[in-house]
Length: 586
Image (tube, rainbow, N blue to C red):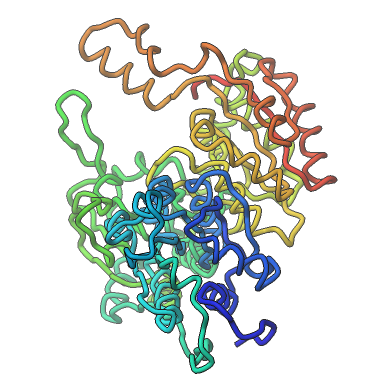
């Protein structure tokens, strides 16, 4: 327990006291009257330190910042949402955090629940019975403590549930009267150190022995990792396992799972490789069926990538949290071995069991396999580099050209990709070699995540000199443009590169497919999809909110100087900058 704060005086002080004891560093919020008592405690009771208030312009921004911070650190951050209306604004970001298994603590105010003390009009409009109903389908847990004495238990349980794997968001609602209530001297404050998060779940030992035998004996194995790299220890264990048995590894990008520079990395080639595998090990994938199947756009039928004889094993906690409202659990897939355990615990155990089984004769076979995989790795890198240089001088700028120019600008920096992947080109062309360099995607696919995610990454690395890179798609930014102001206000060194194709590309592709299927004009697909009448000037949008902006850039030879100028601002001034580059669709 820390002793640097005086005893809490009000219910809101007690809530903030709990956050300080649990090590919550930040609270992201768009101010609201339903938690004005909490806000007073943030800035006056603690002096706006631990937790520090991160001022936002929209609740979706607040929660998305906390979402990305949680992924970057593995620890919860708090986002505050103003009663019913603020929580409704936040729902998309909460859903993203839920499907991405990110530990976010969302708090809010409501009431007063005692109807006799409500103000006429607004207090009734902004109160629900109960508020948690709004998000219960896509949080791990929600609560609304009914007394000041219940606040510590409520927050402790929320913190534990959010942190326990599989992680996810929780929601805690505080009645206005509890926030304002004076705390009696008799209230006993909890000894925080005795309330620990449950330990990680280990595997069935027999299952580990079975899997180790399969891996050691497999002729053509493949490992596919998606969300396994939530802990750097997993990356280390996966590297050791892959090198021990010469296993090709495909990183699907839910988190950073495997270095792109490693000769056993086959990311981007896994679908082709699956056609002749005899064993595939899947690590923390939320969609194993989708991993192994493709769907025909003509008849909606699915066809498998892998042969029927291929064994499939999974290590995952993904299915440990079911749900009925949202079906992010995906279609059920056949598995020959389904190990429900945390990869942080399981992979080191698997490595040790494989070491016990490996023989000298096996090592010769592994060396031959490693040589073949290394060749595949090198050929893919060379092929992608050639493809990236096609249309080198085209305008709008090709995505491959942009990826190479950005890489040339940051390759000698200590960088973090907080958001975006340039349609996969960053993984193909950049050297990902450190676990903190990639956070993964949004989870639920809801737009508006990108710029706030970069802010969350910047907060997570605030005490370092790392360059936070935001590859920002244009359509996504239009959902939460106010996040730019938050970055400027808190002076966060984020280098934003606009991947601006002036097009909602996913919708454009769907419109093209449907038009082709129905033999209708594909030229009309632009209606409701393209964003070029008028085009948005993102550099001016950034400058209007206090961020240094350059662009729009349409000529490829202008990219490198612009990136150099923006990077100088980020590195030397430790301020955000944005470079708007008009790009091709992909």
